[in-house]
Image (cartoon, rainbow, N blue to C red; front, side):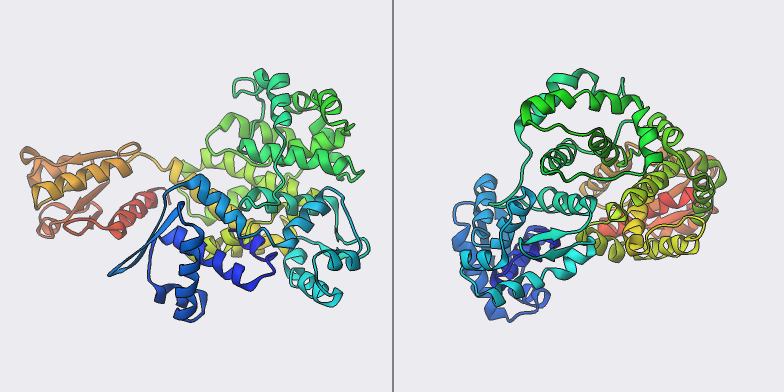
Length: 490
């Protein structure tokens, strides 16, 4: 379960159960002591929780206990999903958010009575959610109880809550008739051959954006988009395809969706850029760039990354497009650049070095490339992920010589693993007997030598870069090889 949804669970035991579930789903193998340390509760509490969850998920998941701890495994995923939803059936805040989304509003005192709370206790439970709502630029507003803030902020929150989070008994799910309409009306035009700009968004994310716009606009709650951006959108070929759904939306949903709402759906979709379609990124930048300073910040960022000059051209196209998408979202509503807290925590801790360096860069350029300070860390998360993805994807192909010794089966295992990890992008040469001579290796064209035999380091490496790995490589060895290969473009 996402951190966002955890903030709206009122029962502390249920919160702990879902945190425990998050851990065991991720780790699969665990001990009671490890769980107790991570959850900051007693081992007795964890043991009781496991007993309860083991019984609750009977038939869908197993908690197998062995000498080294527990092993968790789902055996019936569909049933497991439904049983997880059952844990939330009494969580009234989830139902409350769904009702607010659809515009079904009531007074605080009436809601407190309906859910069997005193008004004081009810308000205290609501107050627990204030920090999370504030991070979206939102707050509770009373009588009738609703969530106050700009419509763009509300839609970002609703989409994160219903789409990014796990399915609950109170989830909002786009109706199938929307998908049927899109595919029937413009399905033949939804192809990479016909797109001008395209998008990196996923199908369900698109339908959530569309469905949220329909249901909110039907309540008279519409978004605002700067006129200078709208003028560019209304001229774009892909937008006109989307806008052609206007009459179909009216017929099926009974909603006269304004043109600006189609622009919203379009922009939210196309601001999720690709990493492997250079033509679309060039078109996106040409069509929507209203900020000439993006050229300079992109060039300076590549220098900041210490990318070799000969490797910058292709990366420039994608990074310009990325910075433009960030600027468009910031201009519409800064919260659109907000990243999920779970992702922020993972990236900032697992790629701490690059995250810190990129944050310094953005802060240094805040006058030349102003963005909302509130979401600068979120922008940095996206920049770190996207730039890392580009560097990995566009790293030049290299020639790696493997000088391996040891048990025959261990050698074959290492060879297969290396081919699985690096064989698609790089040229791997597993040096046979006839080539294993100093003269032939010195004349060979190679970028990296990988060996598990230390004697070879002095005999064959000379000026060629090398890595010494274990007899049977572990995850650290494979990571070191990947890191070394990526160093060649910086």
